[in-house]
Length: 142
Image (cartoon, rainbow, N blue to C red; front, side, top):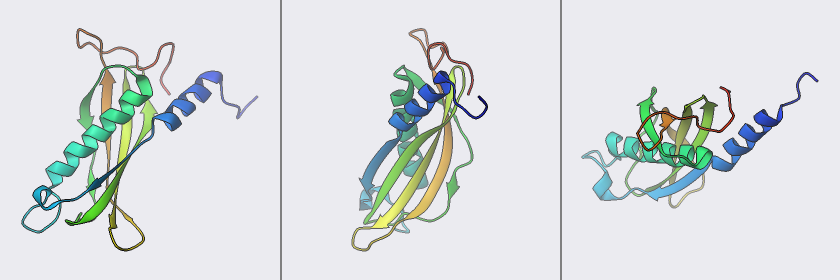
């Protein structure tokens, strides 16, 4: 029937849901620049780590980052705040995955949070010889 998902699509959806990764960090003075906000490069490194965790949890294979797409820095992340990074698989290819990482900032002492940064990373599953392999067994692009 039209509109019904195949067992493969259901399996992919479940893996996407199960691999979503949430990590919280506190922003300390050693991570900030002279403006008292988190270094952009430091945030990018953490975002890449979250993308790696998410992709690894999805495929359970060795994986490497091959690119990052546009990264939007919508607001600064001040020292003394909490950040939540959320990694979500947004595309499953034959040997690669795209993972969107959203970074939310919140005050330690007030309710509420705002999205500060968002970006997408492409990662590729590899074998022992560092050659690309399918991210899932018996899967076609999604």
